[in-house]
Image (cartoon, rainbow, N blue to C red; front, side, top):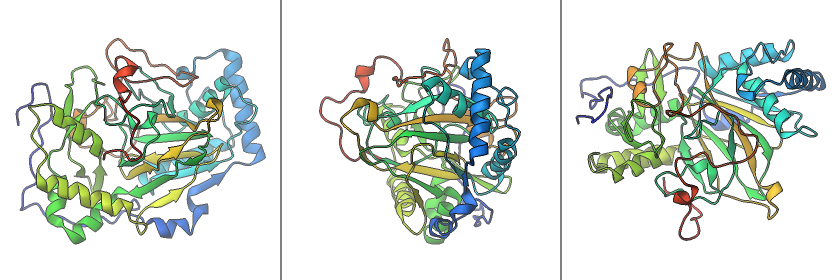
Amino acid sequence: MHSLFPSVPVEPTAEKFALQPVSTEQAWYGPALAQRPAVWTHVLSEADCAELRDAIAAVESRGLDVVEIRAEDFRLPRLGGVLQAMRKDLLQGRGFSLVRGFPSEGLTALQRAIGFFGIGAHLGKAVSQNAKGHALGHVADLGFDYSQPTSRGYQTNVRLPYHTDAADVVGLLCVCTAKSGGMSSLVSSVTLYNEMLKRRPDLVRVLMGPTYRDRRGEIPPGKGPWYVLPVFNPHHGLMITSYVRSAIRKAQRFPEVPRISPALNEAMDLLDALAESPELHLDMNLEPGDLQFASNHFILHSRTTYEDHPEPERRRHLLRLWLSCEGGPALPRVFDNYTGLDGSGRPMGLLLDGVRLNAPLELEDGGPGASDLRVAAVASPAHSPS
């Protein structure tokens, strides 16, 4: 299909292209890792927390804008080594880590933001997550309807099917938990590829071909309202994955976009079913002070439906970072169709024309246009469309 805007072409995968299983560190099974939490969890010591408080105070005293914080501004002589090891594992190894015990209690919203952003600066560079240029995102329910074209799932309370985000690494800091629900789950996309290859290699080929996706009104310079990108992308011995089924479904509103074929629907159904299997994914309940970091290239993440407390100040609330990481896995050229790639081949985020990168300290709508475009005429469903 000829694009109406600059786009790297994507062709169906030729039958003669040999499909091989991928045996890298990114291929793991949830139940096995659930038995070894010490491998992927770091519990902050009192000395670590004291170092974080000192670093937060030093940045606050200088009056730096949160988005200006770099690793050299947020000095962590002790914890920095742990974060560098974690960074290596995120980009070259298992692909995720959990940090417990961030000292949120007693911190102001600004101090909490400085601490989270500062930790993130040791892992990568924060990029924009939405149309408003938020480098610091707020994951909470704003009452939006996920089925609306410009709605994003992170600002609803519905279940989020397994998906990836538009950055090298996504980071979350849990501030408040829900009254019930909201469990986080991760699954290795490399394992999903391998398991699909065992069962239906024909459907693997489908997911290595073009999938057309809606930008939901968040259109970076030089891009169009939709883009094309395969789900599975073999590259330099790795399997790089990008998958957002809701964006594929929503792109059907554009008449020039090819219709979703029965084969593509079948392939996505199988991918979703495998991700949902307790034999593959890893569940974790994030508690206040927990930080979760995951590579979008090797990990799909999900969240269950949740119910908030009636008091607004007790609503489920997580801070989020999208990180572009120098030295991350080489990405196929077709990833330029997504957010664009910088001179180092890293994702550039969703920074739109005329929008300045910023870090709001309070919860606000990050979507394009008026918020009422994202509010349902009726109550949101308990289960989001995939």
